[in-house]
Length: 188
Ligand code: ADP
Picture 1 (cartoon, rainbow, N blue to C red):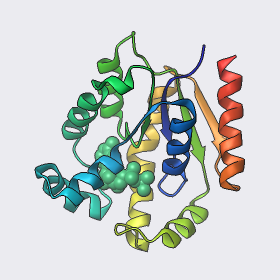
Picture 2 (cartoon, rainbow, N blue to C red):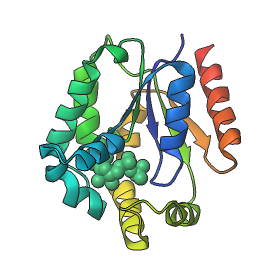
Picture 3 (cartoon, rainbow, N blue to C red):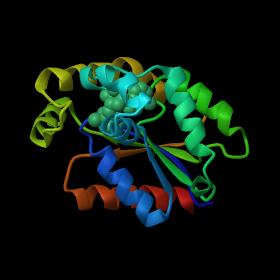
Picture 4 (spheres, rainbow, N blue to C red):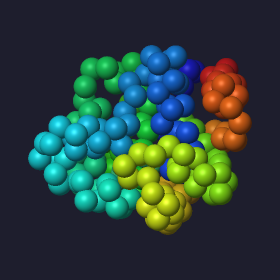
């Protein structure tokens, strides 16, 4: 079985977004990045953008209801039929429950990629990146949010889906290589 319905997890600054974009392109999966969707809405000045700006800028989570509605709508689009890679979602156990219910048995995810990176490395990288919502206190706040709210999602998913853990320290190419190796092993 080839893995074509995937979730990718990793703390802020783990390189998850970069790896997700590359992986989605290589495997022709619809790349669904909720962070990118929210930032696009903010840049466009849409209603959604206005609703989420304060939370995103503070590094807090947008409500589960809003996020679930957004992702459910996205998953109805045709390009997700052949496979998708969810990046940044689910971020809470509630979102994970909603997602599995929405996808049902027919479209259940095949697996979860987990990029692991130590905290000090995460702060160092995030500061170097310089995004608008990246200053040291926001980064530390986002790490705390990740530990408190998102790490438990992995516990929830563990009994339900295969988790492929990938060491996220090294060059971009090395990490890509590790992801491919894990996926190939799971595919065969
Ligand atoms: P990073 O990869 O740096 O952790 P993302 O680009 O995935 O961040 O998301 C940026 C911000 O968008 C988050 O800090 C949060 O405010 C909001 N966000 C993204 N996805 C979700 C989600 N699934 N639930 C709630 N908030 C989200």
